[in-house]
Image 1 (cartoon, helix red, strand yellow):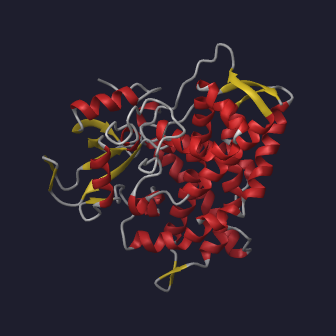
Image 2: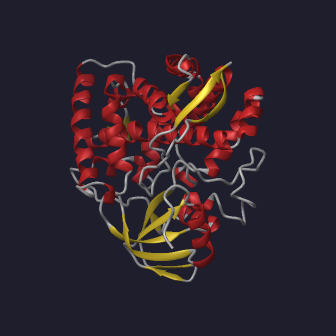
Length: 388
């Protein structure tokens, strides 16, 4: 049984029932590695993500053409903790709230450009542009380069089979980002600005300045993760609220319920569907012999539809207890940007519901998602609405 690309839930449930932990020799990672253990139950995924002694985050080859391999998301402690501490202050709830006024203005400006038309391509005109503009300002990169950022994001997260170049498209995007940020780092060394890159240039770990490779890993991580996850979350939320017009109407009159509705979207259509680990030693994991060097894929999207944790998981319920959902990961690698993604999405829908009603799909819309096992990302979402 194969995964349905648009709705993977039935596949997740089949695998949880019949092959909850299984080895797939044909599985191919974004960087070209083949063969992986695949894990679907919620409890087993938690066990993998907290067991750093056996399951390492350092899954990528550390090569010159793969600067992302030095990013904190693919680094183990103690180095992970050191790198994370350098940027954690920028992503605390206290720091993120300071961005609220700016985010609200961006959201209003984007919607204003389409309000009179009473229609828009939600992914391209809104869901993509909002987080890219926010993270561009934080990093100090030109918003005018947004099309290039999106191109890199697609090449980074898509399955290799979706490109003629295969995994080489991943490394090509890495090389292009590396050249882009090397020039930007050089500029900031000469003329520091009030941005995150300038501050990282003066940061130290154990009394030593960050290496160029460390800086590049940070920049690539923040640019990609800073926009991709939020774009996917906004798009999925819009689609879900269209599918449930009663929820849409309720939220338009009860803004205080928007955060818990977003939390349920994160579970229902997880913006990140899977993540990788690699075995550091031979281990018996719940009756399965995993060898040192074996890749492990944990399906966060499946964990969020595990019936033992989320009864009636295929039902969208904004009043559900979602404390155990893992849309942003689990453990020490829980997504640092989660508060920012939540705030941007909350503001996005306060803006939309405050000015629009009766939001629906454009007639004859034929939706599709990007072919990626890492993310759930709509390619397009043409919508119509009425001005309030």
